[in-house]
Length: 312
Image (cartoon, rainbow, N blue to C red; front, side, top):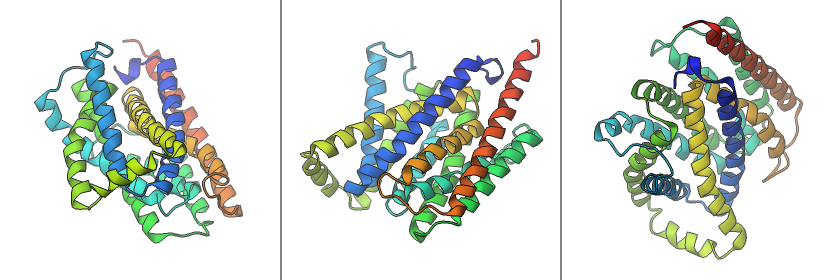
């Protein structure tokens, strides 16, 4: 679907659904990795569940996703690689970084997307968009200065995750526009292509087979079993809403939605799953970040209204 002709309600639905799913997934993954340290195995199972669900959905006629195409798969190999690298480093960072600071670091992604756009000759953004994203990033830096539980390894993992998230968002936007793939089709290719890579990693790193044995033992706990199932289900929902938001809107919109949902996640993160100390810099940074996100949202909405008003 052409972004310029996308109905405003669909753009809003895609953005809201991604924001809600993303916020829920942060807490679910954090809760799981606090009880189950094998994050790569968790990611492998999430991708396997996604691929199987879409495959059977296509067979049963529940989705109109096209059959696997080798040429398309070759084009999306990098998308899959960057996506899984992003999630893998994000899960690793959650082991040592609390949720508010994890979200603060991930909020640097919008600025990275803007910079990446300069290299693949994406259309210029308005001054309002550039200034609002810069304001959002400034709020992130200020909030991060108030971190009293600095974890170098966790910070490095989160920053690497930002890089890979930027790369896969840009690639998803380009592949969706150039190849006419739907969000479900990109999900299927991404999950399927990632499995050989992830299986290789869990074997090389030594996670397998001990990770499976531990998982079997852990699922005896009803609490962990519910968390694990939620993790698999929300992994599918998050993937779908993320790709949908990127295709219907843009890579930059997807990252800004992530920034805005981070405000709620950060607030809850002070109290859930290991709260952190409230500091003046944290609060000030979050206020600046929120103002930048709201400014951006207004600027992008005005741009969409102007585009849809142009006669074709």
